Amino acid sequence: MKEMLLTVESKEIRQAKVVEKKLQELVVERKKSRLITGNIYRGRVTNILHNIQSAFIDIGEGENGFIHISDIMENTQKFQEMFDMDFDWDFDLSSYDKKKEEITDISKILKIDQTVLVQVVKEPIGSKGARLTSNISVPGRYLVLLPNSPHRGVSRKITDKGQRDRLKQIIKAFEMPSDMGLICRTASMLASQDQLIDEAHELFETWNKIVEAFNKAAGASCLYRESDIVKKALMTALDKNYDRILIDHYPTYLACNRMYKKYKEADQNLKIEYYRDKTPMFKRFNVERELEKALMRKIWLPSGGYLYFDMTEAMYTIDVNSGRSGQADSKKNVEEALVHINMEAADEIARQLRIRNVGGLIICDFIDMRSRKNQRRVLDRLKEAMKDDSAKCTILGMSEFGLVEMTRQRNRESLIQTIFCDCPYCYGNGMIKNNESMSIEIERAIIQLIHQEQYAIEVVTHPSLDQYLNQSDKKYLEKMAAKENASLTFHTNDHLHLNEFEMYSATNGKKLEV
Image (cartoon, rainbow, N blue to C red; front, side):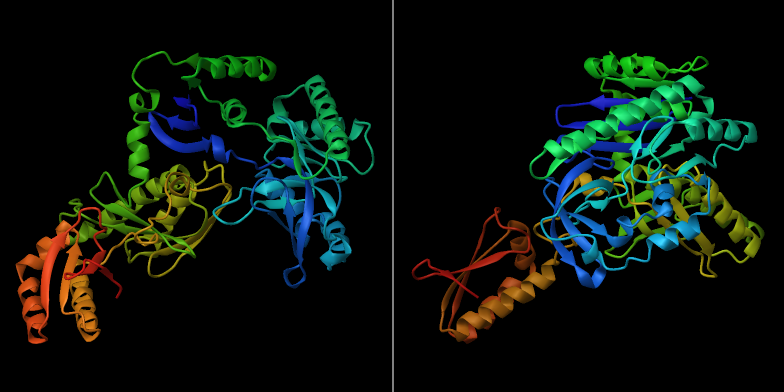
């Protein structure tokens, strides 16, 4: 059974995709950081970077957006990536794109303070602003309108030749300006001609409203907002044949039902239900527990193996370990036991990447296997497990060391970036100095103060560090100070950080700077 869970709170909406009672994907949208991908803005060029042929554009969303010349000159590959599908276009695109690439100087296209119409194609992440494009697209459920592109195409995911020809004939018959195009999405395969015509008219009306708003607006502003998380959840449930959507917020439940009446097909039996139980929905369906696990570094596998997830500036690494697995009873089946752990790891890696929403370069370090056949088995399992991912993924082969390089499309902040911020004490390292290191620093500070002719020193530390110093170091420090005719006293302050200590003059109480 495939279910979509939507829990709505004052500051946050969470969407969970559950298949056979197991969490497969999680989307968290907060009120202060709602998703803006797909939004269309009236922007203003604030800076042009000639060396990288890019520009910064103020769109009124905090950080300035970023646009590269390739996102200004039409690139059909961008459209295919944006809608996560391949399109069968009605003419040779390579020659068309080549003509567009002849202009290579961004200053010939954009000027400082110029007003531009742009669309967000990638969410702002951390200190990076949103990625923008001037190749506008207005998506519906069945069609995508391309206001400044002449392409008319059909998704290659529609494999039925009869359906493809039918859709091509329909969109070719539409009367529209020669510089505008239409794309048939995968869902259009089940749509009637009347539904396609009605949606095309809606998209044209939407575009006309955008143009009208652009001409009336003053300054940077949002002209069109893409579907919110609720509508996206409904579209996903319809397109992926989910059995049920469960919502714990009554107004959202009513709104979802109204949208469903508009998009419902004759043979669809999607149930939209209001969750009434007092037990929180995510707790009852075990989503909260899975969420806690997804925030941990270590994930256990059913066989007793485990995974380690680590993030660096350049990449995300996943280490597979055999742990306490006890499947190998003899030397003959050791290899097969390792393959079994790696197979489990492949499935869990794919699931965790979706839940954690990890993007960018990812390195998976599987347990070494001698047989190339077994390496291919594990790699094929990983590729199969990643097929259901809504983000675009590219997986390379497995090296002799069991390493697999892959990339996953970064479409929004990861779960960790959404929920956590860098620790102000360890500066995001996740580590602090041990007690021995702090004892050494205290010794150096005392010597420095004595050399500055401070002979009565009060040392204040955290109680935990003070307890460590009591074991042996205090006596040594007192003897060391006594040799220099200085005296030490020790006090504690539980408001101090574990890696903090303070020095005071015991004669006048003045804080001493080291």
